[in-house]
Image 1: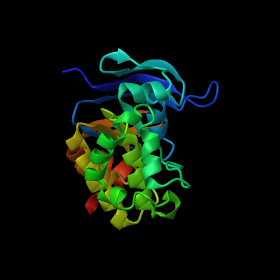
Image 2: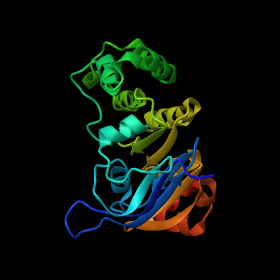
Image 3: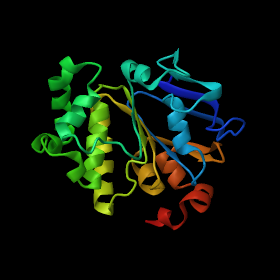
Length: 240
């Protein structure tokens, strides 16, 4: 079965002549959660941004549903069914929760009520407090708004960049639990995550990046049990 989303030997970077990614590849199949872990500076977030058209792909290709989407603009990818939740500045603080979700449905405002019902089923808090401004929310609640806004566009694939970043352990657990329920609504996920141990626990498959290239890949449980991965990338976290 062909992959729903594929990155094929992607080379990309921010500055001319400086490649952050030196040949990264990944496959995402329908219904999967795929994790991307690795040390700081490995190119994890850059890979998501290259897939989503935010960083120029200099070589290789990105495919979605067997269509070459390399170099398409983010709004074009959203209309095709690819969503992205950035790590930072991912909500409009001066807008209410409802207004943030309306921004997520900007390409199809007539579907707002339908999509709001789906998002509210995943995140009841967003419906209960829909009139509250986003800048008055906790970090975990803001992350719910960011994911919910991306889901308003009814994506088939959602790219998550460090969803647990800056959250307390309790909110991290809550966000990870909610992420596992997103696939119940027909959404497949690619997740870059700093909490590598927790990521590997919930993902179906994962890729370890190092210095802009694939270092290891396997199921989440396989990588958790791989002595080399534990030694090089997980350390004492793998014991808990």
